[in-house]
Length: 235
Image 1 (cartoon, rainbow, N blue to C red):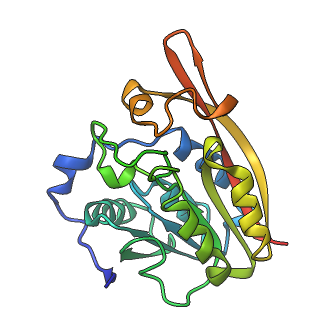
Image 2 (image 1 turned 45 degrees about the horizontal axis):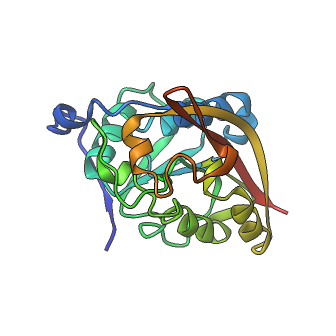
């Protein structure tokens, strides 16, 4: 059973193990959206599924979110977020931390803005330096977490709510679009970028670097992939 958790911002062992976990290009896309769409944040209820290092939630708080709820399956991540929020200016949005996978820690709560940068790399297992396995592997098709996340959106978005989430283009953008349309939601792509895949990631790809059409491509000895930031809202 997932639990709501309270954390101290005092010295914790997690800093020794997890301070190497750094934001990525995926994080930057979410930060860019928040900074360019303050009207979607200010005065709104915000939640972030799989908060990780918590910088996206912090950005939402600093931009005037009414309240911020974060969740993660790793207690160490929630400790880090709690510690970071304790350093924000007084009067910044209240923080609620929930421990558990995806929507399991949430009751019937609805939010104006739902944010997520979930593991959705297509591989059954992936271990990278400085990252826990739970932060990287999305299952064979990359959708082990993505699909349950999408399934929960209709239950947790307010009538005017918006969900913003990172999406590897090579794990089925149109599949995501069709699913959302079937539940009364529309999908827009608000930005795209290209990321470099490390040799470890390339080796772990379920179908190899050549199995994803032009969404994954090779230049010399380097492999790149197209990723995007998806926005779901009520149609």
